[in-house]
Length: 412
Image (cartoon, rainbow, N blue to C red; front, side, top):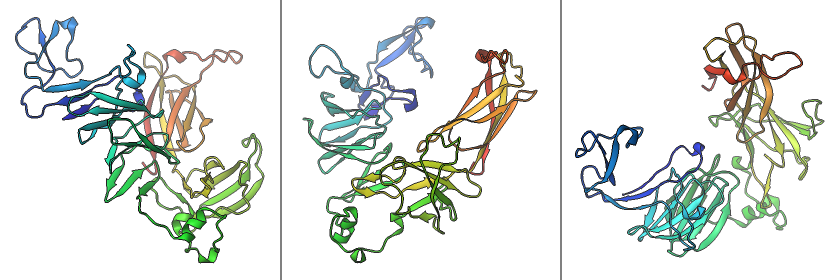
């Protein structure tokens, strides 16, 4: 049995352990047992937060019934007398993949490790230069590793490192790929890719990826829904009648109205097509609005309307139902802070941040309420009251605390 250790990836990377355990044994298979000086011959029960607390008289002894075959934390692979970052096993939420005596595991710091599954000997490591959340997949003599940058790195299944290819997807991959019936399925943040070596496409279909290929448009297959852009809600349901407005890019769009460049409306399936008149290189704005949803905008030729490998990819634009956040601001003694200025900021994974867009003031009981917010990553900042009109340093900011009591929207 192979066990990796880790913790919430949002806490960052750190050292961890890969354990190999003999499953044929029974009982407590821990490497060590914890005793206490009050009864030094009797192991004490396991404690949840700290197994061995020396300040309370705890100490450890090797476990004669240990089921540990080997453990891997670090190894000086290049024999230079130092254990480098790439030679250390870091926290992971993925599992080990094993085949033909080789074990492959990736950690959250972005290091791929190849070990002998029987002895725990380290064969090689590889730095993907991006965080890895998932488990490697072994298929057809190759090892597939996906990372947060959207790279799919392929290695030969070998005790010697052989990098076969690095494929680049257009968005992050946090999930583990699945190999089924000679097809590799990879789920990215918003897409599912199905990759198969013998997959075939007609010449007309391939011609659409390369406009220079002399194939008549009428000979091409009819355009399917997957070639159109779409507007959906958070559950992926189409939003019919959404207005998609295109404007020129200006430096301060919040101070003046950007010049319009056109408007389209989504159909019953939430689909729309970009106008042919849009610029192919310079930036522009895409505003999307619909009844009951918050208006959002994207940067054309950057966030959306992207040209990748000569192909203009279809976009899926997600609108949010507004949510409400309310709570109280208290001082260190639990007394309400009245008249406190509160700013609610947020950022959305595939969109720009909103800073100082929502500012409210607490009432006599220290309560505040902010409406019209997206169900995104919210940050509440306490900014007052201030000492004087001229002195903008907050009063009591070090002792202020927030009690967020309510966050509710149409989508929950």
